[in-house]
Length: 190
Image 1 (cartoon, rainbow, N blue to C red):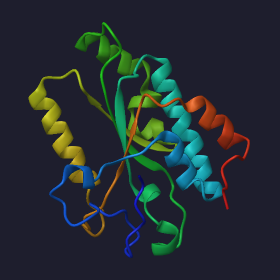
Image 2 (image 1 turned 180 degrees about the vertical axis):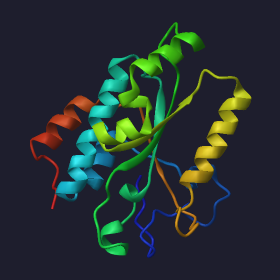
Image 3 (image 1 turned 60 degrees about the horizontal axis):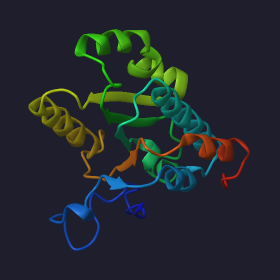
Image 4 (image 1 turned 90 degrees about the vertical axis):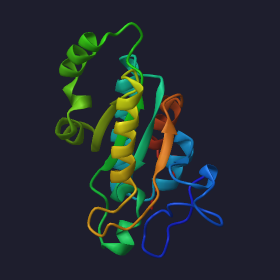
């Protein structure tokens, strides 16, 4: 479910009576198709979505398939209304397990060989994704620390510190059909 934007142009940090029920809190779980359909509202947003889907496809083709992504930034805000411009990219952090059989040393080499996915600057240039990665094969204290960091960063607007929501899309969703539909104009981009 993707809640409606608040008057401030952001997703609400929680829905319902209050933030004490985990099911009512961000990040809101959403299917890949629902996410694309909801945000493919302009040429600029569609271009960003195409990059995002290609990013996911490449990541998964290399064996990173077990995890999820938190989606945030101006892409999941109503910046057209609040700032008078389209978003430039999509902010995301992928929480995932390494490909099967990868040691930490294997993983370090893998990351260096695929900087277009793991360097935020290169991912932004290649895919319009301000992309980061949290390794779910690290010790549990490290995972908690990474999660705390990303939740703190993504749950507040950088310029205003406004508390806001974000979205979560599982890596299990297949990009192929969604990408084909988006390329063929199957989503109603204004």
